[in-house]
Image (tube, rainbow, N blue to C red):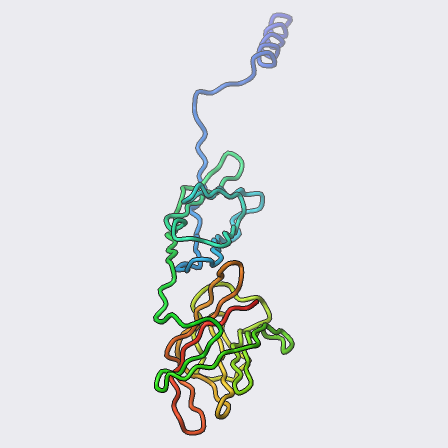
Length: 238
């Protein structure tokens, strides 16, 4: 009995002193995350990288072009340039577990404008008549962000879906203006010149130039008092 007790105490002492060990490695893998972005973008836009909530306490390890790194779940990159194009990768880590690294391709291009209008001028293609705007400003008084340009005989308004400052990109002119149901990439464009009318097709290009918001459109049609006016303009907010 005494010998058995001594042996048991000896085993307990050795276990306490040296602990338990194993040569087997522990592997733990997390499922592959799903990621997305708002690509394609043009210069000056805001890149948004997204991955769904993975698990409580998880860490997100992002990497990408131009030495991009982030540990945010949904990181953003402001004022992007074409050099920031490429594959953006993320790996999710929780404790000793990690997922495989996945990637999404982001495309950022310099704007390719179909026309090059003079600044703060509206020109009609058929007549080469130009209207010089002497008043250019933004407004959110209606609950929508508007870029407004005016002169003694004409007023032009570009209306966005909400009162947030528009980010650079290409916006489609809605064919059902006026409406309060614009999507995030739609705008309404109105002109009060010979009469009042809305354009119903085309694109508006929003860029940031020298820190200022600039709006352009090319060959946009307004029907004014029975006359079809094809127009193009470039408006820069002060």
